[in-house]
Image (cartoon, rainbow, N blue to C red; front, side):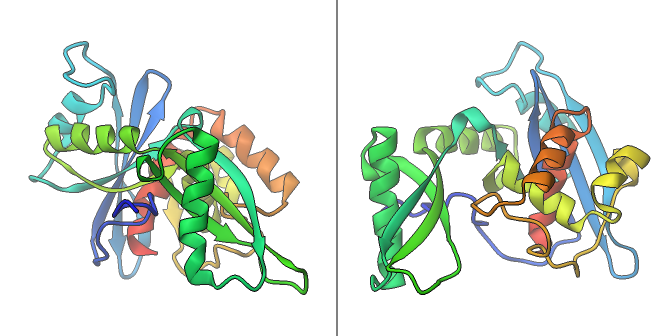
Length: 244
């Protein structure tokens, strides 16, 4: 099993005062820096739009922009995976199967669906609440490990470290779940004015992008992601993970 199989799990858990998220914005990239204050909570401190220069040494196009923005060597940034780089599915397992077997079963499922060897995929999953049925349903997401490694190398080349990698949809859910004012704030506030409440329950009225059925919420979030603020919302959700 690859050492980074749960592919959006943070590489290190530590308390930070500033965290960064990077999300695709068409041909450009949205970089958001959030800062933590004991009194004011988490708020946007920096916002950058990175446009590829055409002189990049990688296919991603954010390297020169990250080097320009970098305020200290090897700071961490979390990066979003675009929808076309991620596959998702549901795996049903016998309810009596111990949970410590789930990882290997999901890994084999993801590899088979993607047509790759088990050690060539990165993935994560979430189980539905256990009922009285005979099956356990696991909602999984996965991608080609090559893409993850390429992202890591591109971030390193720019002088940063990769903190975590996560599907854009999941990061957006996190941002909306903790955004003061919720989705309505996207219509009434500029991104630089966003504030986030860490005490809010992420599961209350929001699903985490790994299953569940909240169609109305999903529709509103889909519309938000298609707006100009969408990439910044994703990048904010990525950075927010540092405190949750």
